[in-house]
Length: 132
Image (cartoon, rainbow, N blue to C red; front, top):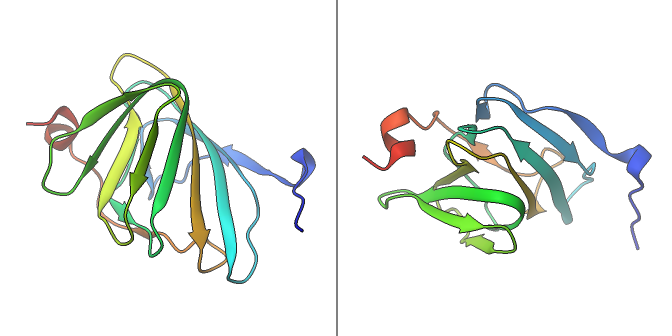
């Protein structure tokens, strides 16, 4: 059993090389694989991740607001609070808030390394975010 208390959480702004816009994260520290990366992430309106993949996939549980998300080659979709989004292993995707709402989600993925195993890529440009 592993217990992570509130004082163990790593809290702070999201790194600029992972996010566009203002983002705040509470992250449970991960150990050597296998482990689970658990992050509560607050996105200000219009904020979003860069394109990225997870070797074991990712689950998002939307806590508040509306999540805007897309996988490569498809237009963005919006998911209301209480909804869940699942990205398959190695599926290139992004997610964030809509342009007019804050959004908080819990992101869960198998951590294959101490940084969570995420492969971060290029920013999502405004046209991709808008679905153009």
